[in-house]
Length: 511
Image (tube, rainbow, N blue to C red; front, side):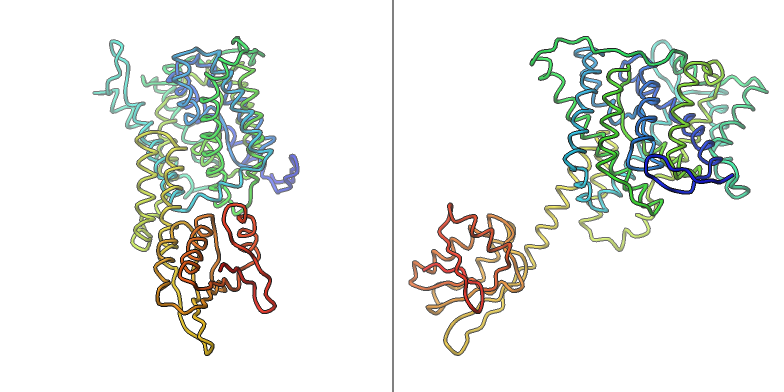
């Protein structure tokens, strides 16, 4: 059944059936993850589910990317664990609210566009590292609590768990080859759930993680001292949480753009994420951000609109209010199998096929980002390190490209035609091109194929003109672009360079 849906200015053709089934599947996979991270951080279990409901609903309605799923994500929760241990959950709620405010400011000032600075090798490393994290997290389901310690399952318990996980994986793999009328992940969960109930199989269920029964999220103002000392405590956590959430969110948004061949709105997504986190802080939620695993589950189930995210959020709320006794019986093996297949689907296998065609520095960047993501679970740090390394590599490669063509005209004027940008990394190579001692009295540097990019370039020209002046010679700068001349004009208060309009070409002269 297909029709047209227009939710908040996104006009698109929507398959209601796919959207509803995808939403139900997303809800089933989001709940155990939100519960697990809430328990890991020391929060009450319902705080994780409330976050999944609030984040999912608000961002699905207001966000900048249909198909993107947000919830109580581990990337942001991990940031708050230390604050929870040192100051308690009330300070966590306050930090989540402040983090939301920061995200809204980033959206209002349209800073989300800076995600374009993330190169493709960083994206590969980020996605591959995240896929490994998702996979390794599922191995925890093969452990059980014995005398207060987690130990690996053994014997029949292990065989049952492994068998049910493999059955889930098999259904997810085979179903698309037989029919595309039903989301394979949801079908796998239903089949394994039914099998466990009919044969009364003793295996780990959602209830073994935590109870999911509760009421509607209550309004709550964080009970903290409203003073500057409190701000000093929560601000660092809020800032890191906001940055981590938006980094993962905007990277996930870009990934969805590639998969769906459509364009999302990064700044709008920042505003939606901030609004959702503020609501979290006031309604007992632990905060969150877009969840790449659940987003991929959503897309693989056929969703391309906002409706699936809304359905997933409302499903979680209904389960909290009424459906807990049923959902608590869902075997963790089914959810584990689905998430393992998500990890397999998340991994950029294409990066292996093109690895021998990629520059060595790009391979190094991708591996570095993946390792930081896996070992430190710090997605923001991984991406930041990747971008910094990429920028340094680019600067180094650009610096090596600067060169000069030299000749003397019939009037005895020596010309240096510069090729490549003059900036901090190329200054040293630029200075080596000139022979101040042996050059004639008049020298012209032609910037037709070059440009001055930064203050280091200006300073290099300043020092070079001084060297020629001390040798009793004149230096002219020819064919400067308008932006270069403006840059030099603005620097006059710091360095003595005059811009002179020449009838034939623009000249900067220093005698």
